[in-house]
Amino acid sequence: METIKITEVGPRDGLQNEKTILSTQDKFEFVTRLVESGAKHIELTSFVRKDRIPQMGDASELAAMVLPKFGSQVHFSCLTPNPKGYEAALASGFKEVAVFTATSESFTKKNINMTVLESFSSFQPIFDNANRDGIKVRGYISTVVSCPYEGKIEPSKTLEVAERLLEAGAYEISLGETIGVAVPTEIEALLEVILKKIPSSLINCHFHDTYGMAIANIKQALTMGIRSFDSSAGGLGGCPYAKGAAGNVATEDLVYFLTKEGYETGINLDSLVKVSQLMETKLNRYLNSRTYIAKKNVG
Image (cartoon, rainbow, N blue to C red; front, side, top):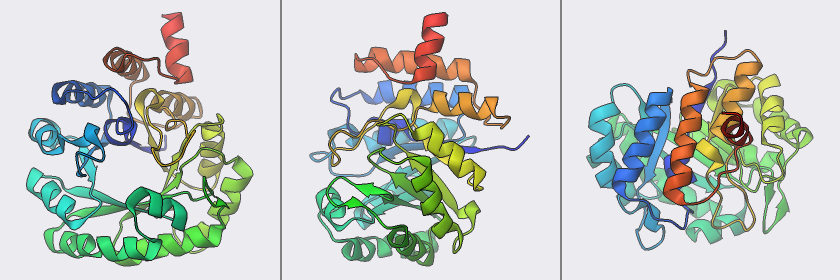
């Protein structure tokens, strides 16, 4: 049975836009439950300014609780938007970091107040230092199909950004369909261009589920050889710079789909449902994972 790599992004990408600020202990419990459910790749936090993203203000404290306990059994990563963030991540014990840019100039400007070209200049020192320190770097690209400000993005633009990230030293490129508007034919068109130049083993897909198309898009990516996907427990997430963008594809929905399709994920669905149940209580709101809702109603 073929195994699919799932990167659980709930603790970082899922929580960063939540209005309810969780305690570090609550986040630790969230991560503990994810590990117990079988998650092997978890994006834990982001080393950013607390005044910009308050939810991530305890990155060092959370890492100090999580990494000593689970670091030997789980691959933890964190987002480092600048060299200062990278140094903090290194000091906290991370062996993998992520940088992000986008295909859209407008989105990049709104997100990190830089042009796409400037974003590469800003994180080149991260790649240089990571190479020196033996740290893996993952590259995120947002708005790979469509931008909330510029509309449709040509696949060639995404390819150009992806190739630059790989040249800089990224070991994997996460293609972010940030606003969740794409349909399978658009994913097919994107990947046809990407995979002519870049091996599928270097590509991850990160789908949002605004129009309920994430699983259909994952199916399309699977048929084209992609074996790495991001997801978030309960469908947590969204983007503060993309109005109306729903959360990430729910990890429950992804695990349910992949399992029924005959793939191995290493994640126990029933345990994962309990994780989302916990997070509904912590965040005091309903989560929108279809599989979670179905399982909750049945059992």
